[in-house]
Image (cartoon, rainbow, N blue to C red):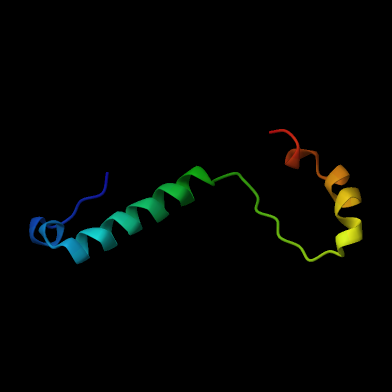
Length: 59
């Protein structure tokens, strides 16, 4: 539950900000226990790397 001031909710600019904050909070809660992975790798090694990371092919 996210509580917002009625006047802030009535203001379109503030409402958009509140909705973005809500979305970010939901995303953070859903991501709990997950791991994000970002790497730089040569293009010719992507297939070999993908084989080492089975979660890229199935949950």
